[in-house]
Image 1 (cartoon, rainbow, N blue to C red):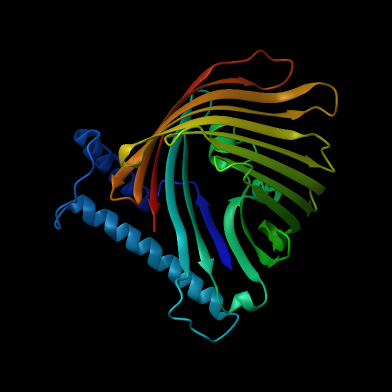
Image 2 (tube, rainbow, N blue to C red):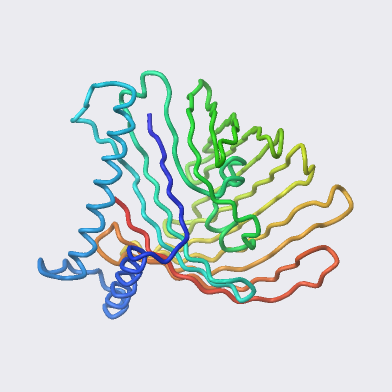
Length: 332
């Protein structure tokens, strides 16, 4: 059974600056080479050595953490087990005209913990507490880029989870200040045709702050051609205390080019209800993104630009705001 560990922090530490400089340098090198595939770097290349060292350090840290956690539940070492997969270290800088700049660092990896798999699994992370508990999907597009982060409530989360039959998953956890919460999640995937994929996710949760609540997320993807894909994502959350539906929707078209380069255009919407009295705060935007490898196939860079039409409440006129961002994505 796999385990996801996330670390999401905001800051301007030395490691962030070092990786940011690496992103800019590799981005300039990739731009100079144009659309041609990136040739292997010489063994003595400083930039290549920096990237390789960063990747090795991220993976060794994840493996050390996985072995330590797994050791709590048994003495077997399982040296032949590959404990880490789908590891990612993402650094992003995003600036909207109507908001302060946002510098974010996100670390996550899927861990296999053989000793723990005998009974249940452990989850540990640091993220926006409400977003994590409510199981809100696609944070990059719908939270960080569209909606102002007015509820900045990043917190440490940990707990135990139990995989159940028929796609169910039960979690009992603690957030900051030892606040308990529970989640019952259900996920179902369909493939109506070879070119279409549908994903439905339902999460029931309970916290002392919100009491009972529910999040429903539905995504639909279709391959229009070997290089064109269309994706539509919708989500809605309601709690017993607020009784307001918080909703978001994203529709994007993605064009794949040679060399694993990707061009995306995305329209995003988000808002919330007003207890049945009319439309609440909502926001709309258009995003254009370009992503390409910077070093081998595991270090990628992304540039994003967009325009937004925010409306703080239902009595206000829509404003206008431009946005620009960049990110570095390292896989290990």
